[in-house]
Amino acid sequence: MTENEQLLERVAAKARSTRPWGWASLPEPVDAATSARAEAALGFPLPTLLAELYLRIGDGGFGPEYGLLPLLDSPPSGEPAAVAQYLANRDSGAKDPDWPWPEGVLPISHWGCAMYACVDCRSPQATVLLFEPNAGDADHSWYVDAPSLADWLRAWVEGTGWYEEDHEGPEPPPWGDFPLRTGRGPVRGSLTTGQVPARAT
Image (cartoon, rainbow, N blue to C red):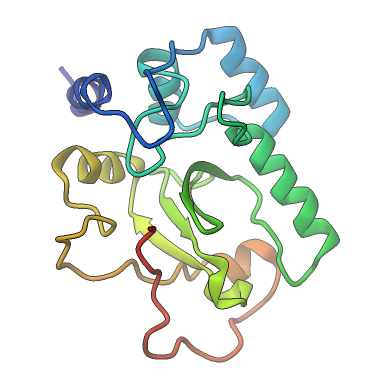
């Protein structure tokens, strides 16, 4: 059994036993046709591990805090699905150059307070990013939540994520590729003390 297969089994077990806020039950997984329609709408393929979460475990409704967003169709709570949220963010970013949204960065989980966990679908390891816009500056709103989607899932399964109340490790570091991925050039200024993402409440 591969490491990803073992991880998927651990994620599935926790998904069956815990419910994020706002989810009464674990949704059924999506089918291959829904996954294909999602990729067609996005214009890029989903990382393999992310696709497997939706195809084998559930269409959202598991994971840290509010859980994963549904992939293509809106959930009962009315929160936009991942594809719809990505397309809306790209459209909004095109209209407002001060807040560009990087191509290929798919929101997968809402933390509340306009914060999202996102997967960089262009990175080989599917880096998970944290979008935290409350400082009011796009250049200082992106952080590396986990080096890979696998690492992010392990942190949830093992209860070691930065969002845990008893977390004592370092906060997520800034995502240095944001200026390059959005054509903004070098980041203006530098991070000041205290400019780290706040835990979702």
